[in-house]
Length: 122
Image (tube, rainbow, N blue to C red):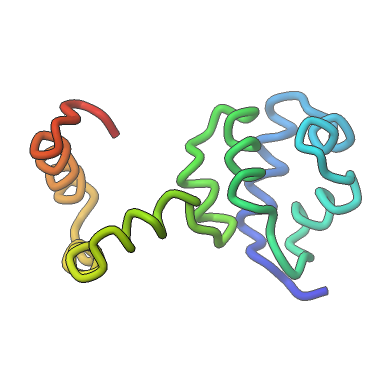
């Protein structure tokens, strides 16, 4: 087995134990084997859990699904279709936003939400 993102695994273990889940119980709730979950937490898996499973982990732990999915080295399932819907504009937008500060990114997101009629959503 190769090392995957140890930050994801250690963060997952820290949050799981803080929420009072045993390894076995958390694995059961996710439909994973405790052995596999232990390897994930140790950063010793070839492939991290799917984005759907990581999303479920985030729900159980009260964490941001998008942040946890990124930590796991995955991409949320809805993003490829969004990018493919506008194959020139969406990649260009992402590249242009790459160097923005968090405050600038929030401002851009707020503006995009206003333009798309999604006032206040994130």
